[in-house]
Image 1: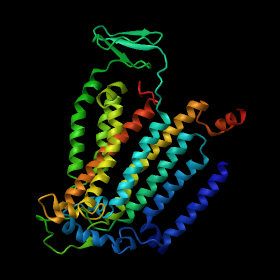
Image 2: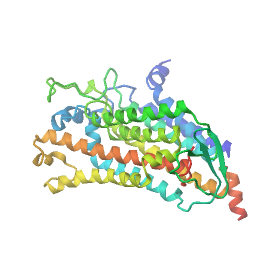
Image 3: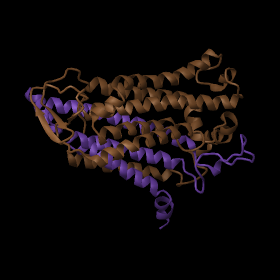
Image 4: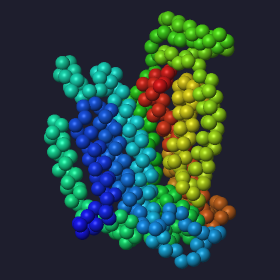
Length: 131
Length: 275
């Protein structure tokens, strides 16, 4: 019972992200279709992004936009009052980069389809051996 | 193969789950990630840059190099899509036209085009698409509002959630709405391929140009404080303006690359008909 309270209830977010990440990893290894592999890669990236964002959260804190009057804070600023902005910054760029890498991956998949007329991995391998 | 994959996945998953034992509880304000560098950002951001949104000030100022090369990565992705897929030779194939007053579809064999000066005929995609008045009108009306919202997201990123990356993606979406609602040719006519390529490079150029401006004014690369020498503002406000310039560069680059990726992937590099 104590194990559940200290490890599962307090950290269930990490468990969920690891499960999501493993779904993505399984799709990347086991699926035969290249597009399904790409979707697996995207699920994997999403799990990492969620993981980072949840590292930065603080209980009872608000978004990292500082309340201010004019150009000064006006009162003592407590960092525990705002969530950690650093993971947000890192993931903000990671999201856009993941979209562009997905675009390049799709372009490669289109090229493969034009050449071998299929996206199934085993069929591509047999066609490479035949030629 | 599938069984092997399942074993690998279960093993690594179990290892990772075991490792969560050492993680701090969720939402702990004293977790190691939140006690070292981020309190300094939170405390000093408003004072040093006059930007209340700490995410923006870290993105474009404290970690400006990171974001600059992130923008370069996006630019490279656009160039890679273009190089992989773009085809310039036009292959001869059958064309389809719609006679606008009567709605009759005409199939022309041998690739002869009806000149676009005769306003009665409209080129349509090979996969026959019926003329849809509602979709056309709604997507046409939506475009300016999406673009206005995108400009708001870029320009107001200092004070509310937003910034160059998000606004750029929304701007790109406004062009993609045209490409989906009408067809790819309409979108390319409005936002041409040449302009698209120039803008994706221009964004990176603006970003590094703001950095180089700081060097020319006698400071360090991307240290916007020295812009105060040419603008009638204080040092902290100059940083805020430098961040705005950088965000505009990011927005332009991201928009152009999103449109470039969509056009190339959707039309397989032929730019004649999309999805």
